[in-house]
Amino acid sequence: MLDFVRRTAAGIVCSAGLVGAAYADDVVMNLGWATPLDGDYGVLAKKFEELAEEYSNGTIDVKLRCCAQIATEDDAFKALQLGTVDGYFISQNNVSPHWDLMDVFVLPYIFQSGDHLVEVATGPVGDLIKSKLQEATGVHLLTFGGPGYRDFFNSERPINSMADMEGLKIRVPKNEVMLATFEAFGAEPVPLAWSETPTALQTRTIDGGDNGTSVIQEMKFFEFAEHLTILDHFAGFAPVLASDRFMSKLDDAQREAVLRAATEAGAYHTEIKLAEIEGVREWLANEGGMKVTRPDRAPFIEAAQKVQQEFAADRGPEFLELVNAIQAAAE
Ligand code: PAF
Image 1 (cartoon, helix red, strand yellow):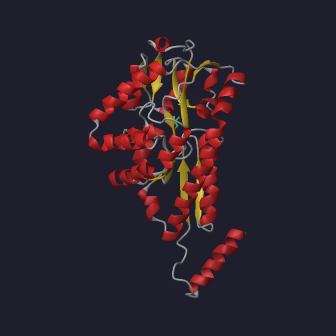
Image 2 (cartoon, rainbow, N blue to C red):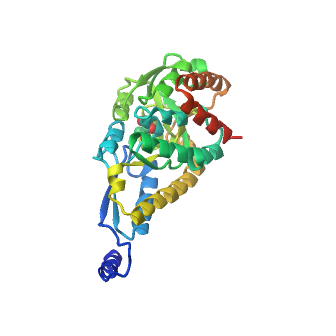
Image 3 (cartoon, helix red, strand yellow):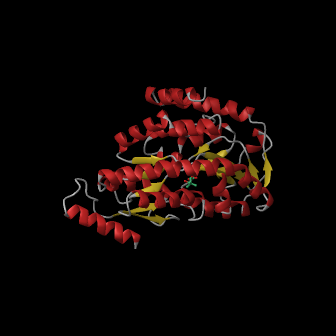
């Protein structure tokens, strides 16, 4: 009702010629992701929906499409480029096969702390990544969302040292940095699309994998893999991307509303996520029955540094510049 009143009032004002900037046509934004509605991405998506609708005076209708209804995460980036999907959550590691500079956010142990994660994602480096991505691919990155870490799980054995990784068949997203990292840790990484991962875990085609802590909870992976290892080796963000086709449908006021909603929803999500990580790990141990280990990280960090150096040397000066900027933001 309120919405109807607002729209009617806007219509009267516009037709009377009293304002220069009229509301554009109503726009629907189908916002997709590949995990459950009530999971971690859902928290950010619902906040974004609320704020984008409020700030656009109801002229943008955000429709939430969880659970890979409109695309799989591995297909979503191409669909955003084609404009067949309006918006989608794609973790940074699944963006890099389409734009490899994003791997600076995937490098193992590149982030030193929660504060560092937030500083980089919301500061000048994050802004630079957003503009470079848009320039290179046409895809808009609205927010990196709340940061956390990927935790490692497996069905075979507790990991008390890097030697325990030996020979484990570990699902990794189709990402070169992740593949190289698990190889450096001594495991046998298997690149696998997210859409095939739950089945591979249930049928024991793979021994384990890694995911954001809350994804392990919401996907009930603790039912299939009882060993949880906390390494904080990879950061996990919740990046929300939008197609240029969708963004071009918006007038200036609507575009501003979308960007403001994404920034504020990202900040809201950040606060929740950083505060909840240890609680979710405890839940996985107590309610989920997982056996948790926290091995000495020094050998993992040493192996990871070699991976960082290899990629910094291989990927060229633009990549190296961003790596240096991320490292400088920690100081
Ligand atoms: O593991 C992945 O492929 C991604 O992190 C996931 C779980 C689909 C979330 O974006």
